[in-house]
Length: 614
Image (cartoon, rainbow, N blue to C red):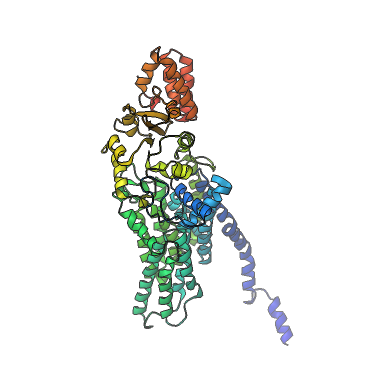
């Protein structure tokens, strides 16, 4: 009897026992296709986007002084805690914001050069967004929504994807927040803390040796502790468990496990003490500042889109809302608006704080899955297109590695390596890190991106000299300056620019120039072989004088010889070719003038000498 009953149930269609199997069979192709999108296509799209926005020539001037710190450790086996690279801060305390990251960067650079650093950035960002994407899938956000969140985060943070220690803070923050969210799944008062909460002190200890951004993690930790206190007061469970307070306490002091100990927290105070740093250094400015100093518009779009996604998810996840999540979001938002360089922390932290609410948002948008898929694909293609066209203002074209010689003083540094210029250097701020790395103690810099190392008076005098509030002679008296290596992108037509003031002084000789930089030496202190290469006549800051020399039979030969030398040592700068075109035109050599003019346009179509009229 039982046998017949069993056969009957297995064989009759339409019975309740057969419907789940039939439904599963019908859904299986769809589920398989969805898994292909979630674990294959979307991750590939994200990786392609990361390649586009990270594989670009290095243009960060600060990564070089970080690598100089790492190089010292590799050569001497100890952490460098005093300045040895400048003549204005020699011996002053240097607290590196990320000493171990500097060692890693230098090790990679020594072996693989610029492509190695680029690969480091690409792999680090891939790990960051791989973690965010996988956690979003585990929280049932769905591939489409998870990909959109990641793409918005990339657009909000891409300007911080540089080979420097703060990149590691962008990686540590989401890991730290993901572990901290263990308190959301913990029945406080009735259970022991999840085991992985005990990893929080380890993460902070490691983070403190990678970058000083660990302070942001500690602030959010105590926002979460406050949230737990509020939760416990509103419940009948009583006091916060002592084990959780122990975890929070150990985490709060774990950062001391770094070579500088407690002194690492002095770094922020040193930077704040620098006069006007938040209004004069681009990356330290507020997120929105004056016209001409704002970030590229796609960056703001990414920040706004990421914030909007979090807000929508938060509203839909009413049943899971935690007070500390809001506190963390507000902190990261205010931190980014106060200091634009912290937008990277906002970009990688907000997706983690949105994780608990993405499932509800996905459920609401489920009927629009095809639109979400189109948005994910379109977003990936759009970001790649923006990078290719240069709209992201981080290079353009297809991904390529190398060093951006337009943004970094590569050619003038090569000149300084070969020429024995006088040793007391005054250099433009953005040149300092690159010069410091390549010239080391042979030619100490005046200033560089390590502003916390310098006495605030040095920074103030640097600004005063740049703005013509401090004379060149006074600068010489205070610091013994006898060589100037300066940026000249905005020198043409500005009579108070250092390049023009030095040009008009008979005490100084121009010995190098290209489209972006110039080097002047003091005549009385420069060696004869340095002065032998002086551009006495072929000076781009005095084109009228150059033309007068070309028209003068006695000076013509020297003027033409100098312009030939300028083209050679500047690696064919547009300014040098433009002067050559002016000379050829003045001598009636029209075809030659056109050829030189075309060469100048190829190098820099915006060269001001191309528009200058005698």
